[in-house]
Image (cartoon, rainbow, N blue to C red; front, side, top):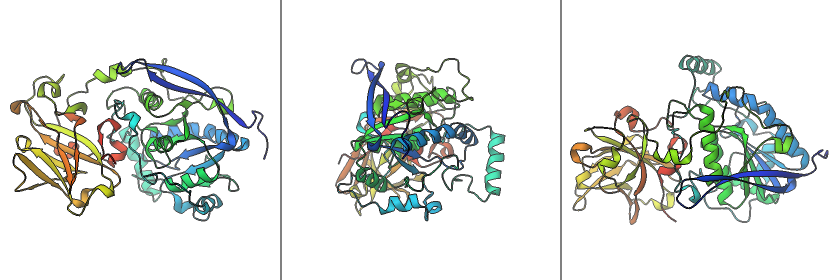
Length: 459
């Protein structure tokens, strides 16, 4: 192995943010210097695919991918472990030595709970206000360009919605040393077998896969690794036409802030390569800091967009900033249902009878009213085919309004056998919408749902 001119250790300046005082909503930026032994460090390359359904996402990734490759080469030269994790692409690497190497690693003596699954939130995020609306999937393409790109992908024989087939060719894989896996348990086995204490994440997209994948930031943090994100080697799926109505790169910075405050610290590529941090040629901002946390807490979306709301809540609170409105209100939240929590009796939603006129959908499937419920309660059955177990689901309710004084007067309760989950806390609401655009999100809830409206049973 060739010795790096920097030496084998990684001398890092970790940036994080801490609340000035509890509940203030005001944060101060902190930095600390640490030295990580390269042989105890892994770099995970998350979903750096060879194609994507969003053309602008492809452009941004291909711009910084060469520098990412240089980061990986330097980290590898110093002795770090490189794990390539292009999700859904393992078929392309069935005969690759790096894939076989990952599969051959013995199972770790201790496997963390749910390490095979997507992680939508860790405890430190529970009180955080999620900074962007990504429920439209985050595409920011020009419509005409997007249509042309989709047609090109189709002509290539690819699914325009999921066109990735392998990792980008801009990222080199060392067949003699690297590992390839998109499975959380396999990645964990690699880390444990090699004595890895420190994990660095690079790749896309930060607000979805980098945070949530089984090998992503949240899983690594909650399972006890020292974790850092290289913040100039990532990108978000964010559409500036959605809340908080800022440009794409400011939206990206807002998610990085969320990570620094509630998940893990960040570093920049120059700390490994030298030189200057990467900055995109597409980023035309003169100032790269915008939208404070306290502003997000009070920022109300236009009435046609989704806005944070507490359930239960008075109509006056729901209607804040919307003006006079007398129609039904849309509410939504996300729910993670562990397989162990759901029994053969199925899953039902219980509401007060006063809220009984509420219609509901679960992952886009209409809820079914059941007669003979408990006194004072209305019970809606969730179709079994609509439920994703051990995964995140979207629940949408529609009803209430100014004429009824309140939308949801009590928090609904999810019931399965003897198990109950009260959906009391932060939801999202909108007062303008239609069934087609409001009853679901156009992608799995784990990608589009925000962490601040997630409910899950305590286990």
